[in-house]
Figure 1 (tube, rainbow, N blue to C red):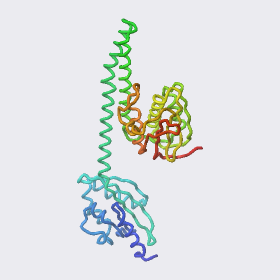
Figure 2: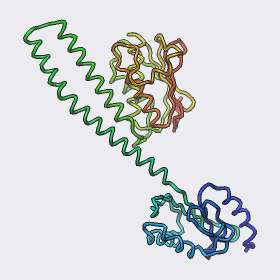
Figure 3: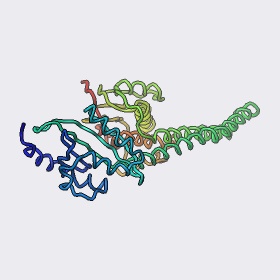
Figure 4: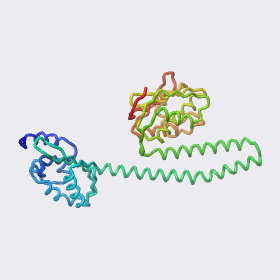
Length: 343
């Protein structure tokens, strides 16, 4: 067998330059290499070089008190060593509030069997996840209040308007009140959508952009407009959210592009675009169009493009407004994971 010292200097050099806490041990559980990050994470008195040659079992027992469930921390080490099967992202909570994530990888060095332990402090990640979870819960509460507490009195108003029509017949003031009421319902629907889509992607799946574009075209009032789909790409995304994105971009094109507008959905490198041949968006307004409540149309609520941007950001995509080939509005969605590309 090759001399043990032949490979360990290389291992130690690699380990020292990794951002995670790293521990490498041989088949006898003697430490071959570790790094400063490991020492700091476990508040050890020894330096990485002083730990080399020490027995891992003793070190593990010495730091076990740092964990809320010491027995679990130690027993899962033994189980991993017995099975010699990789374990991924096993979480452990510490008594000081930190959370560590541990990966185990058994592998072979030129000198023989070895074990690699990788520790990562995910405390900030967990706090952020908890923050997002609470924000989503608040959004759901908001959506519930809007749906119930606002719709109920508006339904009463709608009923009264219908009674007034029966009693007084056609009346200009009643027509204006009905239009205002319809717009209020539209605003509520958009607020609900914005609240519910403002969440992380939950169930990504394979989506055919061509198929979903056709579905969206059927659900939006498009009048005499024409749809052209020039992509057959399969992407990885949340289907319900992508439908909301495309529906709002199609609706925006129809509302601002004219009755006989042509809407084109095509392929980009790492994404897709939605373009129309209408009057387009002035360069100075292309960033503002995504602002909540911004609209140049009297019929628009000003939420559609904001919802589209929220969906894009949920997927870690980028959406930008630019000029189409014929001068119309063009929205480019990039950073998309394309699974298959069909010509």
